[in-house]
Length: 384
Image (tube, rainbow, N blue to C red; front, side, top):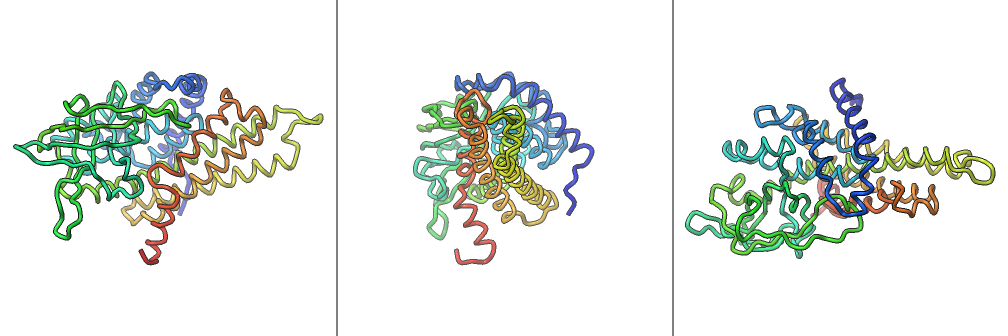
């Protein structure tokens, strides 16, 4: 398999690299420390077409592919992960389920605004008692007089409480299957719907310039037509959504890992110790070389998973491998970059401080590293 980029993909990568370097990197630290959402940056990303990258033009998108989205995520995360996760969640979790499973009416209503970045969508899956075990969903939706009546709580939901959030797609138990297991369906809940409220805003270790909230549903009523896809297929739909999303998170992780290399190379050429720049010392050279090797290997893993997905081939195992390898690379590189910077790496004014704080969640979100290992083992035919 060839991993060279096409001319279109390289043009996109270079454009986003420049945007991240010139528009994001100089200002994002202030947003991060204030815990403020970067609306102006998101609006610029929308005008660039980034939120519409993998969607067809007839749905308001750019007519690109999922690999294009991954390239954009990698370049954004080289500068900042809060901005990157806003794009990743807005596309793969907010808009992609509508594209994959929505009716013609649902697509026409929501996708043009989501693709333009004018509005954001969110995906309400995780609950206080249902994280990795998403089948333990306790949120319920009863069909009463042509409306879904939703009750429950969702946790850690990205892009759910911004001023431009238009909808949240939630998984809920809508009945019981013949085998006694819960029937899980997916339902669109527009922002501002009575009974739907934004709960606490989390005080997070990292991703401080992204939006993450608890969601509360108390007898929230939406039309029956807001069912997304087939009733009872919500669990299968979110598994497909997460398989794709893992490739995107892998790309974001590679961006953070590569950003650590970038900053360490620069700093090693500037910082002097014992009469020489620290880049002359083999201890630093080997550490940075290992960082580059991790980033390179992880990039090849997500390239492979994305190519299989776009070719219509099975990609679940490769997506899990990419997510596992890339998130580990991000965490390891963030730790090593902080060590290269020494005391300055512990200061928030330096990007590696943000990278260190942002890296850990990559081993948790959209499937923990333990879940990825379980998926890989099962796909190899080992006992479930």
